[in-house]
Length: 407
Image 1 (cartoon, rainbow, N blue to C red):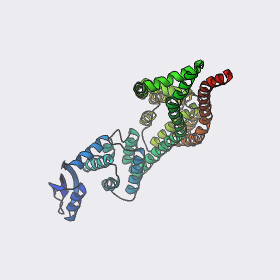
Image 2: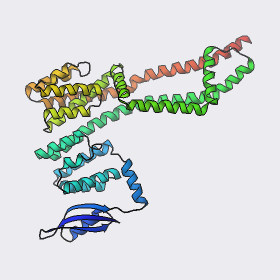
Image 3: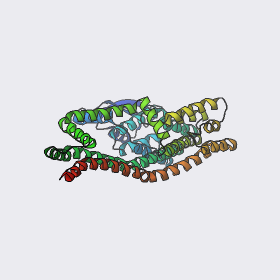
Image 4: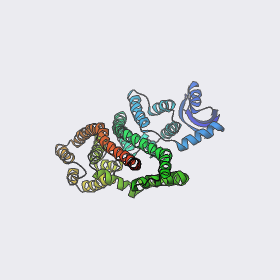
């Protein structure tokens, strides 16, 4: 049992505060409403102790909210508000439905915050790691214009498009990753079990070994006799690589490679162009101020090269220059089509719609490219496998042929 503090209104309009022990806040709410009183807010004073409470705290501390959960949250909340439910009531329903304990706590805290007089977007700002600036700004705009449900639908659509693109790219990379992993495992097994058998045979027969065979045997011997050291080196290499990728230098190096490698460059440029256009379109359509929309888009676009362009665009737009001029000056990052469409939007006064059209175009193109990504990578994988297998076969079979010739 936990102890809750609550504030309620009596039937005569008089407010009062009291405390109650109950299993959860919903029990408290039900008991108050049974007596014909109206709940203003309920907050936890003392949580129940025990193993379940400790597990719950661990779940909350380690918890995250998946992108899919955020999409459903925005979509369902907008639907319930449009159907006539109050914001706190809608949040209460979503809190009961979610199975994510971390998200459940967030929804409960937001209800308390709103009950105390804070706006919805202010309660979202308390969780910047869950609700990005894009989410908060569009909600704030919706609250200001009285179109909160429409803003939530726009947020859900924006998040969903981004989520689907990421999902398609990850799906396209699964096949190459699985193939490379299997090749790596098979190679280690061959070096650990097969090569030693052949090595002992060659030594017994006194066969002269070529350099390639000596190289393979040396790797096999090192792997067998220094297994722990090898594992330590592998863990160190992968760990250092993972850490390096999280640093500013590492991220920028990956971004540079993705923009320069022919296989990935087109899709990288189209993804960032689509993300820029879609975010600007969503924000401008929701009524967010122009410069603020560019600033938020800069935060949404994760590639540092594109962020730099948007930083310049923010400065130029503040001085009265059109964003299309900035976009057209960076043809190596943004295709000419993006800048030209932005220019048309500025001339016609339909900039949000034009950015939406640009986003639709590149999102569809990215989907087609990701479908063919595995097909494009497959020949490279086959070539890599062929070289690896060929090198191993030649290294191991050459001494055998020398032995046959000697006989």
